Amino acid sequence: MSNSGVISPAPADSLVQRLTRMNLQLLTITMLLTFVLLATATWYVARAHQLHAAELSARQLANSVSPMMVFADRAAARGELEAFSRRSDLLLVQVQTPAGEVFAQWQAVDNTPLPRVMPPAAASQQVGAASATLRGLEVWTPIQLKGETVGVLVLRESLDGLRTSVLVLSAVAMALITVAILVAWRGLLLVQRRALAPLVELSNLAEHIARERDYSKRANVYRPDEVGRLTERFNDMLKRIEVWQADLHQKLEQEQEAGQQFQQLAHKDSLTGLPNRLYFQGALQRYIGASVERHELMALMFIDLDNFKTVNDKHGHDAGDEVLCEVARRMTSVVRSRDVLCRLGGDEFALILPELPDEAAAEQMAQRLIDAVRVTMTIRGQIMPIGATVGLAFAPVDANDPAALLNASDQAMYEAKRAGKNCYRRALRAAA
Ligand SMILES: Nc1nc2c(ncn2[C@@H]2O[C@H](COP(=O)(O)OP(=O)(O)OP(=O)(O)O)[C@@H](O)[C@H]2O)c(=O)[nH]1
Image 1 (cartoon, rainbow, N blue to C red):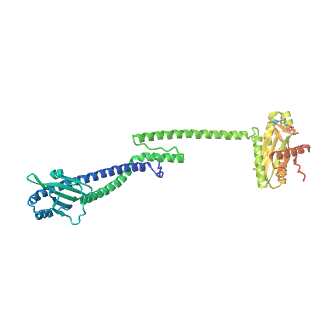
Image 2: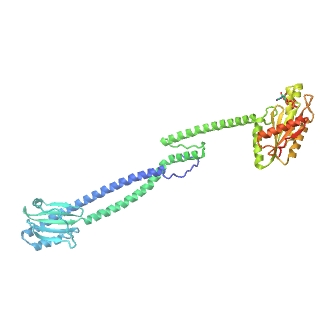
Image 3: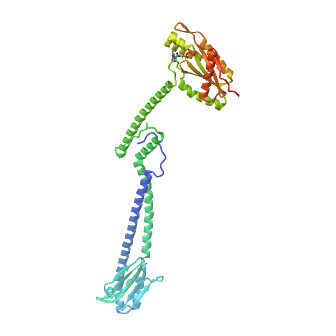
């Protein structure tokens, strides 16, 4: 299963490493146990072998020295013992009379005396005895002639040579075991890496998907075992998530679109297409904020049509609507691109003029608006006696909050109405 070039860094303690470590631990323990058992068995078998050989030699020697004991020939017995002493591990060989007196003996020159392993006993003198420790062995063999016991032969041998041989063998075995464990470690890593590769890839893919949120990725299934089935289920899950995600995305887009449309409708005057009062309130707040922050002059114009009621009354509501639309078009054509013209309702409009160089620029704009509306308007073959009256207020000069600025421009508009309509007035400046 290899997919999509998804490569993740190996985790600090990966599955492969953990399994390899566990297998290796088990293997090491088994090998060490086998090694200890084999070394112990080797030691006991080799020692038994040496003991057996010593018993045989002692018996032969006992046979050889028995006539010398009968003839009390100590010199011949010593010569026999010396001839026998060529055995490499021999420490002591001694011929005793039945009373325990030393008849003849040979002792290795550098011999360090061994503790007495088994004291001679009457029964032992008849049948012989043998014993062994870690350091040495001792054999007691009766010396008999024609069925009569004439003495005892004591033989002591060191087990140092045997111990050294077993230790060397153990060291070699240990070195081989170490090499075998190292080889097994590499082998286990390779085998487990291969065996667990699909799982590792699946894990990498899952990690990549979680990080990138890319549910289009798929894992390739090529094994008919548990891992293969797991991969299939994983792919099914990805497919379902992808479908859900696409559905969700589409729904979100639709809702966003609907929200935007709703927002636009909520902020738009359906008759003239201009921004409505709701939009105006938000916009006025924003523009005043920007004007105060940047220390820029801005103006608000309150525009009320003149004689609009007459239009409605004389020519009908539909004609009145057409007049409103035509007025909106005319005013839109004269304002600057950055100005915001809104219809507040009825025959009332408002114009926000940001970033003004001076008050005169706003006054010129007011006059342009009045002139544009005053141009003869013919609707349905009838001339409409329409005009516009404008009230002007400035921020932050006259007010720096929306309600106060709107009120100031409204008052100025009423002042203009009183002055005879079709003109503009500036808001009264606050007394210094
Ligand atoms: N056709 C139309 N008329 C509207 C609409 N909304 C309000 N009106 C009418 O607009 C008129 C506004 O009247 P006023 O502003 O008081 O009257 P006016 O004749 O303009 O008076 P002055 O402002 O003093 O010149 C009313 O007759 C309202 O019924 C609308 O959407 N369409």
